[in-house]
Amino acid sequence: MKNAILALDQGTTSSRAILFDRAGAILAVAQKEFTQIYPRAGWVEHDPREIWASQIETAREALANARLKAKDVAAIGITNQRETTVVWDRKTGAPIHNAIVWQDRRTAGLCDELKRADHAATVQRKAGLVIDAYFSGTKLRWLLDQVPGARTRAARGELAFGTIDSWLLWNLTGGSLHLTDPSNASRTMLFDLAAGAWDDELLRLLDVPREVLPAVRPSSEIYGETAPGIFDAPIQIAGIAGDQQAALFGQNCFSRGLAKNTYGTGCFMLMNIGAKPTASAHNLLTTVAWDVGGQTDFALEGSVFIGGAVVQWLRDGLGIIRSSPEVEGLASSVPDSGGVYLVPAFAGLGAPHWDQYARGTISGLTRGTTAAHIARAALEGIAFQVADVLDAMRNDSGIAMGELRVDGGACANDLLMQFQADILQVPVVRPKVTETTALGAAYLAGLAVGFWKDRDEVHRAWQADRTFEPREGPDAAQHRRARWAEALRRAQDWEEHPAPPTRGKATTP
Image (tube, rainbow, N blue to C red; front, side, top):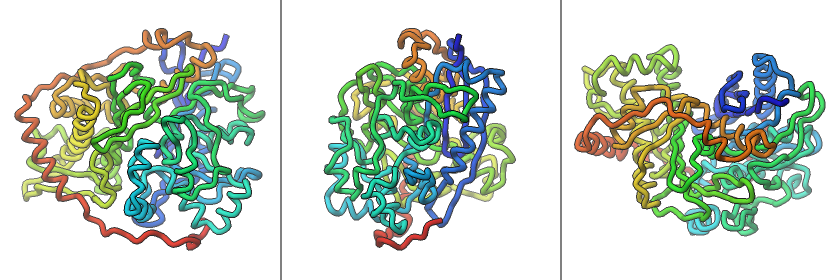
């Protein structure tokens, strides 16, 4: 009997593979970091071949660690860093350029140009998104314009575009499948939420030929199986979801009004809003949550660009900690931040501010400020950004949230979680299995192949580990947030606004 599901969790800084049993418990984990490429300020790239190599290496390692063979695995589920854009040759499978990462800001000038031409309302109405360099559409446009010959080759059908899920699926199947799911398609600025399809008007707006696009299939479905030579036997591939939607599913937020926040490289809060894609009036995104069993659920989303990445900066940039887990001990060595506020707008500000020209600031420094105060202010800066998103979500949905479910690497930080509860003034609930992104992908794949019978069986496996109740009163939270708002104002609109790029000027790496 097949007794495991393999989740491929391809993230921004590492690739992971996790095997889950029927109880949703982890059987084995393997993880491998890969290279972050910064060609110039504000540009972030990955080598797609390194992503694929690291992902398949971790998959094989996880199987070995669990002492399982491919024949023991019922299905593979894929979850991925979203918006990161790859274009490759359909014949050879070779990328035409490095992947442009979701954090990359090179298309900010093009986004300004689109907004000046009054296209923002069209993009929000159809795609549910704001016009921002964050999303895949302008990255794809940049590649077609800047890589010599790419646009001509794309029009001839020689090139394929995909987010990372499509790139992994293509390689897993030996190039036989070029697919994505609606949760990833809805992050491109090219997908009509109401129609559930690629949209001709949006394609014309971004000058993207339909020939490069993947087919869109449900998030939970048997797509095919792995090609010979990938594993020692073929494994069915049966689930795909962008990382944040997968985490929403993994957190069992199946009903309208349930919400989660993932603390990863960035922070991503999603609330299930049911079967209707309601537009946001407070600068949030409307996105597809998943398409399962013939029903599409939608979500409101607030994306914070820099979450756990600020801790990496403390480690790699400032050198005040040797490893990321050390930040909690350092920050806990002082009773508060000493009036220091750190706005980690290293890649601009996401929801609800959407300021692609904001940059990081540290305010309130004195001669008495220590590394501990800065570490604490960095953690608090994560929580303040999440609170800004929650305010917008409450206003859009009209729902008074009873709790916030949390996951991701930084949710293991008790100091951060307690401060988050204090600032939000709602309980913060951490589950026993915090790898909910991978778990969601596993659930989607497992449901498609009958590994789990239905969502009720999935729901019974979810358990809370700890609930952080607010300890501070609302007056203290309000005072802190007022000071945060002042620090935030000083970080906004810092960078000069660039001119839009001209065509045909890039060189292929």
